Image (cartoon, rainbow, N blue to C red; front, side, top):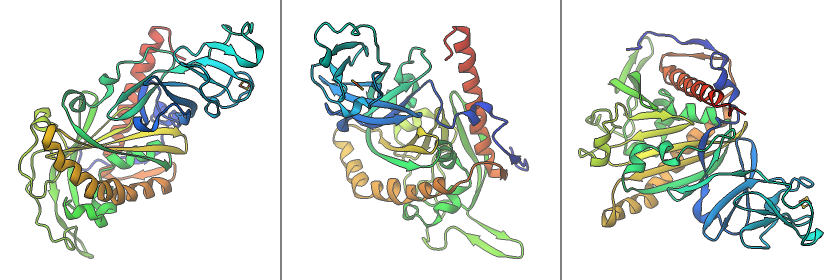
Length: 385
Ligand code: FES
């Protein structure tokens, strides 16, 4: 148990990779848009500070650097003049979507001598969970995206409800907020979501690592507390729920007793977990909620909330009804709006941490270790940068 440990005053210099990752960690796949929103019309996005144009051609999505090498105009203002290509709006430089090769220059005739001499950088793209994912690395081959997705999402059929929202604030504040032990008990005390999901006042918690995730393991929950000289404080006063029976290491359950078999099979050590490059997983008995914090640049991120129900066929219908009718608004809406507000107003370090912030420290440590391993690995193969 980590009870009694005080993390003390911190800046981020103890985690140099983490400190340097203001615009995100390289070497990962990031969800950037709903698949249905990417069409033959070029769309501009920013990911890890890089401007990227995304376009669908013949069913497949492509991504290229969104800056024409000629005079620096965004290719996303252009359009498609020939199949399999994108043309810059200014002088008609025309790039192959697959390879980025300059295939034609419309304003310089069929034999333009610059063709074949210029290549536009491209990005690897995949589609999963109804979204477009882009890999941003340092020239290394992208690992299979399925290696990066949460295992249970990869291995089981699931019906998902998702929300993608552009938000102000550094992605690290968003990720830390998601995994933050203390905020759930206090910030969210007024969320309507809690009509259904009761939460304690405070927990005794231990952070454990398993594989590429770290988990918050709740060793004891306290539903109310006496503060000396001040009085009693309880989270239960206004919604009048009895403390729910705790299903081991799974989120508070209200009236549910049965755990979905796909979720039970994972034997999660704790109900809240986080992994690189900034993915939160909150496990409930019948569904899992994920948050992907996608760095746009140092001051903006995408909040990608995904709720997954591991059912198929007719059994997915109640989930759709519940998601569209309530969950989307209560959880991805109002509850998550409280997080959005805090991420906007959190200030950069220095910071004075307290006991529950062990969750933040362990996340930063994980990020630091994993990034150090990657740096070593890429140096070994001579691929860094
Ligand atoms: Fe793109 Fe000239 S700036 S073609």
